[in-house]
Amino acid sequence: MSRLLVASPHRYPDLARLWHRFVMRELVPSFAALHLDVQVNIFCDANAEQFDPQHFPNVRFTRSGPGMGDFMEFYDATLQAPCDFILFLDADTFILDGHWASSYFSRFDDPRLAAVSLVPRAGAPAIFALLCRVESYRALVPPALACRYEFPDIWPSGVNLQPGDFAARELARAGKIIVTIDEEESQRHIVNFRSTTGVRSSREHAASAAGNSVFWKMVGMFPEYLCAAYDNLLLGCLYQSLYHQPFAPDSAGTALGGSLTVVELRQALNEVREAVQLESLRRSFQESHAKIMRLAGREGVELAIPEVYPGVGTPD
Amino acid sequence: MHSGPQVPYKRPLRKFRSPLRWYTGPLEIFHMQNVQQHLILRTGELHTNRKFGPNTINRGAALFECEWDGGLFESGLFVGGLFRSGQFAGGMFLGGIFWSGTWVGGTWEGGFDRAGIYRSRNDRPTSA
Image 1: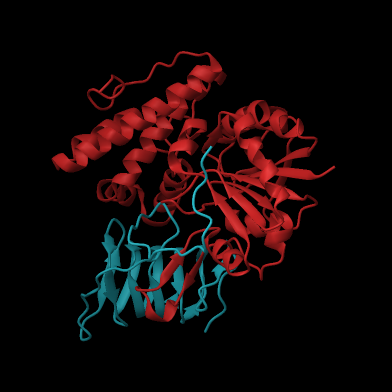
Image 2: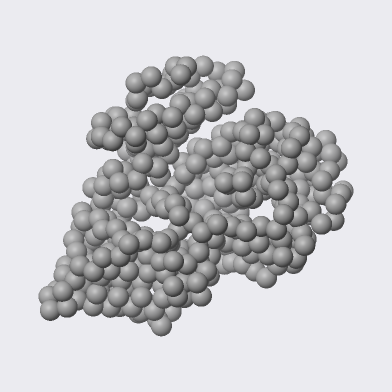
């Protein structure tokens, strides 16, 4: 029996709980039905003591240590785990249709196939939801999956490869194949948010190293923070509905205080002046709103989502 | 069911930058130092896409996609960018390239060595 490991790095146990809920219900049964021995692994990239095993039945936890110092090293280190296939699944990526995902497993009958990228990035394979044949990746010179910066001597004109990019290129050179699912098909079956962990860790890092005021400047400078914070607000509504606990709390326990609270998000949006940027944010929020409603629909719960931007949440 | 291209993979140069990703991308560089004067950066300041020379001391500022060349980084946040030379004595290094210089202290949260290989949290560089 072939062994499949569903693996993901997590920094925050609340998001991990949502992730785990969908993985165990939607993914594991579908792949197990293919007569695969399916295991689930959560790498605690930080806050390991906050991950209560009772909240994560049937999960194997790993913690940072030699050779697996952080989430980036986790990818390559996991290639050495006792398994034949790995599904790397990002912390904020939710596969809603396990039958659809597992249907791609038969593609591995082709020995040239190294992976199936279920969520693309700009039409190219990405690690967001990557079903890998371990043998193919182990054949690469490590580190194969971590990000890297090529041509650093010509910074800032070098090439910053994201996780998995280097491996994808090397596999192609070796004549291997990565099937990249197109975006439209992917979005029919998968809901994924972006940078929801990143905005939380950025707040941690900025506040500790440069002060909270700098984090506020970052929020004003980079619209991606607003999008990620809104996604956390939505995930928080789902989390509150399911577990009746605050999501992304700060050290005082304030809901979303580790991301942007509702009040902070409204305040930050009030300071956005450019019409083009506002419209871009509105579209992003609207898309995210539709995503969370799909997750809520799967759970059979209704969400009370506070309005932070007029019109978001109503049909265009 | 439709699958995407299975042709040899060629990745375009990254144009987009965001502090929420691992990056250190193409940016305009400004020279703001005057070699005759000390420049002290302080807590609450945020600088992007700038080059700081040997006369600079950082005491708490956040630097995004900046080049550090010869100064003393006492505290603050270094995100992305190139640490070309100087002393990193305190603060946090995140996602940049540590090309050369002296690592005295501080938090290595992750970044690249001069070969462009990722070094994980706490795998701080040895002085070069």
